[in-house]
Figure 1 (tube, helix red, strand yellow):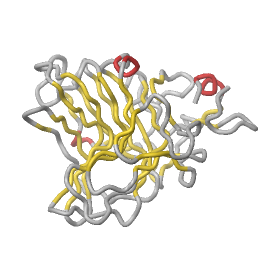
Figure 2 (figure 1 turned 30 degrees about the vertical axis):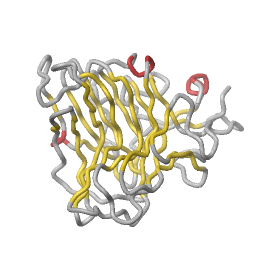
Figure 3 (figure 1 turned 90 degrees about the horizontal axis):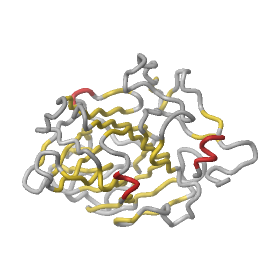
Length: 282
């Protein structure tokens, strides 16, 4: 979608209380708080992808595919299109953006997307299953080695319930906190938001506007151990990757309305001008 349409589109109100799957969004934060929701017309957006301008079966321009992914027109959070992550027992089904555009974001951003899962969701073929949904490739601020900063992930138990987690994978080690409370995969759209900041070595994560505080990281300036938030990312990938096998044919999931921004935009989506199709470039 063009930035012209972004500038001209009517926006959902950010001051009114909104609901996502029955959950009430958090009240506006105090001025200067990084969790303050900023109107779209004022937010600095690095990535905005609602898939409306992408043909069915394709992926958006500027991304590379990993595994079986493609745009569909029979499921959408907004507009008509979303990205379908097709069934696989294990491995990646992702779209990946890399290069100067990602590096220019630097070490601080808000990200958000909507996702849903086809039910019944599969059980792990073994005892548990680790899945990454959003991941950034980068250099560690500790030793400049290659790392994956997994900005949104889950760990699914043998009963099919899961816990959200944040984790960092290096060549010889892996760490990261997980949520205390178990969740169930849903075939309704779920809003997921994350925040990272290199300067303060901070990570935060929100579902339907509510923070999961036990997976937050607040290390402080120059304290990289057990956080390793990078100064910049080399790539960002959105999709589904489970490292252990799922039973049956594996997960089918959808994503829509992906945004990466300097500011938190929360649940806002674009509303096209009257008579204009979603995603149409002006």
